[in-house]
Amino acid sequence: MLSVVLPAYNEEKMLAKAAETISGILEDAAISYELIFVNDGSRDGTWQEIEKAAKKNRHIVGVHFSRNFGKESAIFAGMANASGDCCAVMDCDLQHPPETLVTMYRLWEQGYEVVEGVKRSRGKESALHRASAGMFYRIISRAVGFDMSRASDFKLMDRKAVEALLSMPERNAFFRALSSWVGFRSTSVEFDVQEREAGESKWSTWSLIKYAVTNIVSFSAVPMQLVTVAGVFVFFFALVMGIQTLVKFFLGHAVEGFTTVILLILIIGSIIMISLGIIGYYISKIYEEVKGRPRYLISKRIGGSHEGTEGMD
Image (cartoon, rainbow, N blue to C red; front, side, top):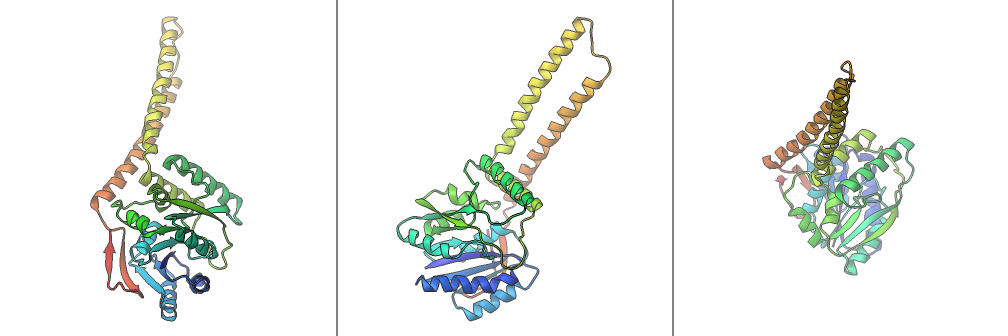
């Protein structure tokens, strides 16, 4: 059976359409399935739409968070509640073409354990959003060590890969990178990002920046290494400036005024403050991990075989 995980945040306008479209495609392809909608603390009628869809279709499971925990947590909650032999993750707004699920499933039947959805095109975007997204993927590709320029959360994984991801104890998990990191026999399928039929994108330039910073820190220590590089650079810069100052002093041409001193203090002080900020951010993430709080809390669940209210870690 194929389990399809669909994180949903303020998607009341698209939820019924998504449930109907994906169900129809999988039934036409004679694929046994379940759709797991995870309501990530939506402020609209998303949960009510999930309940309506679950009453109409016995293959639909609804998971309701106690509050907004973020997309990564919604993905992991969906996988934890999935009972299929393989599990696909896709967006609820149908910008990931549901027809591609059939192709992914057939590749899984051929023995592939991770089938990555790779973007052929990004669809229509504003110049600012395209530029910020491009910068985000360049930064994160360098940080995590994988080429993520066309990566997406749209992918299908065998039960073994799903269990491997769920067994990881870290709270601040970056699903898009971790699903590549686990390995297994992998292949990819290209797709074109579809236009959103209703609602609005949840990704602003600022949210992309926050998403990039959080996931880079959770998956890579590169920013900490940049602190060391900056320290070495400042050391050599100070060494050159020191030699220049001593030469001028012994030649009787000592630098007058405090311009050089002030510039050095400003440069070094700025780098120190930036470095402390990076270190402090890592310490805050370590603090979150040490506390061991669950990734999410489930307040309601509808459909499927799992019952009750639970927290997952």
